[in-house]
Image (cartoon, rainbow, N blue to C red):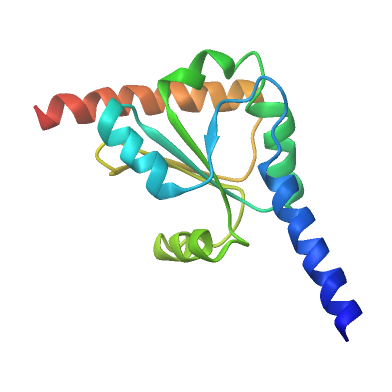
Length: 147
């Protein structure tokens, strides 16, 4: 029994460690929604909440191929990024509060925390870059409307 518990604990720790590892050239990802939403209020940039899981193949493909890609790199500093593993209780609670059902699921929020857009499922680097351009336009529109 103790051995099974140790094996399960080791597997869970490995899964969380894997979820936090990002390829070179990735944007800086926070792993807490609270941290990134506070940063957004401070710096005025929109936020990307990436709901993911270590066991999700499309999530891992996005992490490996899309976020660090040349097409997405110009957008790294224009957003606050959070990578939220839904197997972490606090992240799962947030995931459920947005009434999301699958991963990967990305929410794009204004600096004030209002939903601007979302993406369910994976995409190519080019498709994602196009999505980010559109989100920035919506974020600019939200800033203008707030003033």
